[in-house]
Length: 194
Length: 192
Image (tube, rainbow over all chains, first blue to last red; front, side):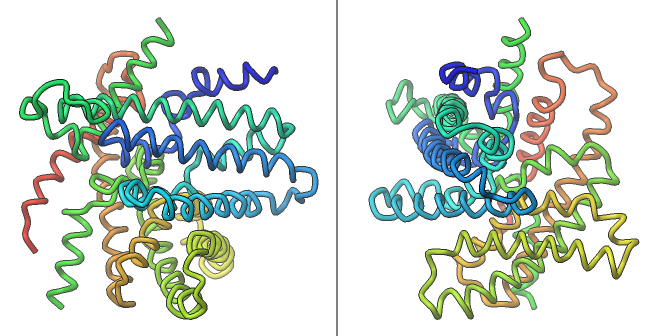
């Protein structure tokens, strides 16, 4: 298993959103526009990269019986650091993503990668896994955000492509999140098996 | 009294935790395949959410805030919830095996249910009073249970229809949830 294939696996074959179907709450809750979706993806990528490396580094000294609580504390510490950084330098983004930043702690992708990958592999490979899975998550959230923003508001990353009065507002609101994600997973399934 | 009624109606219907706040989606998709497990999961979440919100409220107001430790909120809350769920499991196993048999399998899943931590954080952010917090937590959990039961009923019917292959499983479930969310948007006109 090389470093490069670990990264590409995380983006396509083990895409956390479209294949593993993990971390649904931020996927639905923060993708009302392409920019917020991408920011949420990058925030998760940052925490995942740090937590994967830290957990991999301490994997030999953590007793098996208490490993899950230890993983949770490591993840929660990095989330707290991220929260403080965002509050200080990106206050607008922090309030746009709202409760979903502290909730990175309970995103099953992070604990899942810690248990399935970082606790069994060395630091370098775990970093690659974090980058791959994190990038896969970011791309998925950006894709969902782009579709929802385009259909609902007629714009992509704030760039107005057609008048927003032609957009169907429902795609920006809650129901649109479920429907767009459902059809995007179906499309991904279709392409994978075609 | 009327004030609490409005909190309850709002939390169950208008701001339903699944359909308008996007919390607790994983158990919502995962455990809603049949009615019995939907009811079990709903009850377990209701119980844990009430106890966890009470515990985190006390922690926030009597430990974190007086000591100026507001910034460790996330770590402290997740630890309290994890310990609490573990303790509940042990207590339930000893004291009421019947309840444990019904809810036991759902308990370990609840630690990573973002709805529990989410409600604890919302309550802390909005600075609700103690009783208000508990009422809000129970009502939100009932909204979660309602969503789970309604959805389980629909999915049992969905098993019997011929769905195009790429749409089978999660995709069709998400589209169905979207239509349900659309229905729940009808409640947003309620002024309370």
